[in-house]
Image (cartoon, rainbow, N blue to C red):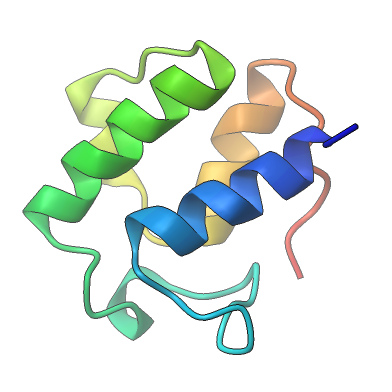
Length: 84
């Protein structure tokens, strides 16, 4: 059974076209080349499809890194753990 943290990791690998060896939960938006406007939309859609949570446009554009994604999902009751 896949937990929320693993689901988030797989989603982020897919959305941002990251390889597993370059992935870290503390990556920032500046470190991810594909975290552009299309990446923000893809992330929002992926979170909705994976977790059933609909991010507002303000939430989606305010995210500055994977830790922010984790904080947002944690605040909505998903068990994604802590970044780092």
